[in-house]
Amino acid sequence: MNVRYARCQGAELITEDGRRILDFLSGYCVHNAGHNHPDIVAAVKSELDRNGPGMLQSHVPEMAGTLAQELCRRAGGRLAKALFCSSGSEGVEAAIKFARAHTRRNALLSADGAFHGLTCGALSLMSDPFWSEGFGPMLADVEHVPFGDLEGLAAQLSSRRFAALVLEPIQGEGGIRIPEPSYLKSAQELCRRYGTLLVLDEVQTGLHRTGPFLASHHYAVDPDMVVLAKALSGGLVPTGALLMTDDIYGSVFNSLKRSIVHTSTFGENGLSMRAALATLGVLDREHLGEQSASLGAVLRDRLRARLSGYEMVKEVRGMGLMNGIEFAPPRRMALRLGFESFKAIHAGMFGQIVVMRLFRDHGVLTQMCGNNFMVLKAAPPLVVDEAQIDTFVEAMGAVVELMHTSASFWTEAIGLARRVVNI
Image (cartoon, rainbow, N blue to C red; front, side, top):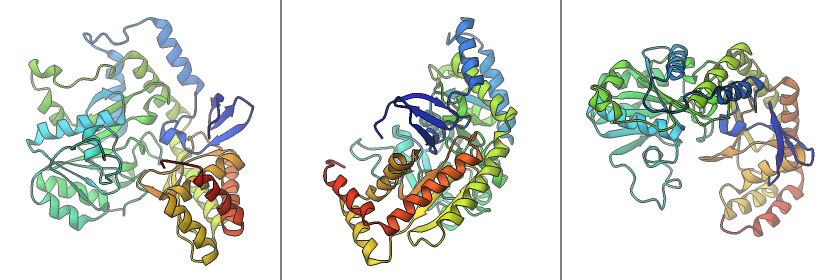
């Protein structure tokens, strides 16, 4: 995958030697509006040419106010304020601080298999020690419960210790895990009963990735805080936002003296705000939420039809254009020997061979989930078209056919693995 790209447009990446790569990863759900959308590029250029106030830190940034209003309107519910930052991790850190300030509690609760970012507070919310190993102690008083387990959640929340329950509406790196329809609503009810804030991390799932503006809109929940980032500014400028209720906002910024206790240097800069407003315009004008929902259903139907009958394909699942193909260990001995050899080298080796084959042999870019190496992501830009979906489905079918019928899939990969060190 070590290639040089000359140009990226829509759902395609063009290499310096003229090869076209179909992007079914979207920079981990960054490029919802497609790569280098001309309207967003034009907005960023216009803002640069304007020579306006980029980040004075001592004025009223009107574009930030406009963007905050647009985001809160789209998110709905009680969300009435926006705090801008530069990344999803930074938004999660802010959510931790604001939850503690509002509830006067310190403990935090999250779900097994979650991915919330790589800063220390965000890492503390993640159950897999792989991400935090070697970085010293994380935040104290953090607990994890199985995703979807309401009984375990109720048992934890009933202690009335927790400032916040932080959840992804759909777990991305956990393997595109979709909860039961009643889970988030029931979690919200438990949080309100025991005085815990419900924080939804929509960094990957927001901005119409699953169809509606927020994935939580599928479940009619009314969270206390929502974290947005990734797709917020069209993949061009780092931007994140924490949406919250008036009461939570007022718990932190309750006086002039405290107006500076939480800020982000680049949070409200003009370039990011302009790019984000342009991105919202593209998502609206091109009806990309509706397209995500309709083409996502097409993608899942065609994948299920193409991959049915293969013993190593366990399930195709997803919402909108956030989808996963889950693989399973083979039953046949001829296949199992190769699979177990991969597993002995590295738990993620099998998945990376699938990724390599898709990229090298078929010109498709995607990746396995970070916390579940048996689930392949299928998350193209929302501007993808039906022909490109068919290309991906056929490429996926060819690779799955190869792993079930050709010894070369396994032998070539084992030879490659032997040449790799420190994996």
